[in-house]
Length: 345
Image (cartoon, rainbow, N blue to C red; front, top):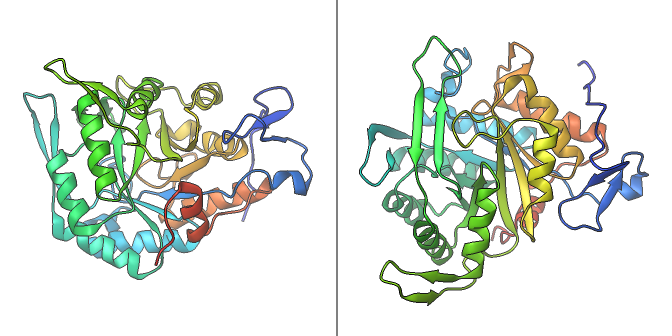
């Protein structure tokens, strides 16, 4: 196995690497082993089951059935992933609805099979990728399958997938106004589901502040107070290089800008859909104390132009990068503590 090559420009401010869990928690680039322990263990999310991201990937046969998807997640868990971000089984409606949404309609039995298989193999954090799905379908999945986390975009969905110029683009579009985010947050809390808050740009931070404040106005001009809709600590995923009008550049400067402006009491994970910059963004995120999302949905390449044969290979590379700089990998129980979830009973 060839050694991992890490970026040389790791410093974000002078000779320090920022730890986003607090302004006083910093780690020097040349930190001693004891000083490195300040940086918490790395939580790795894996997402394997989105066949549309890279249609030329020859190693997507696992997406053909739910057993294959689950087995791919299990191998990634064995490699070090502790959060399983799954899209289950669904069909897409190409028509944009009058309310600005483009529907994803789930196959409940397919979701159940994947969820039960991965839970039987360990104690992962099961995170449902439902951000572009209608609330009624989210609620059905929450009631039936009780995920640990569920995704919601605190920006608007405005994505334009065309990784292969010889294939037509796949647009995803839906708006998420404050009343919807309030309702979603309230119902997630009621059902005991922690939100994975998707942030494509800093506008999502404004929405987080609005929901956290709990001070709302109805369409009829009635003021309503509803507090504690977002339990601490928040778990947000920052998205870089995802094509569309919510795009944020996949660069260290953009990453640092997003991290510098994070809301308080927030943990972050990083997702990047830009193969030329992907592994540099992963390494930089790990170095500054963030967590990472790995998998064929985001980037299927183990190195430039070379497809990984499994998602476990991609997770193993992230693990090597972390250990090269002295950062250990969180166990399933440790990941639950970091994300603010209760232990498995």
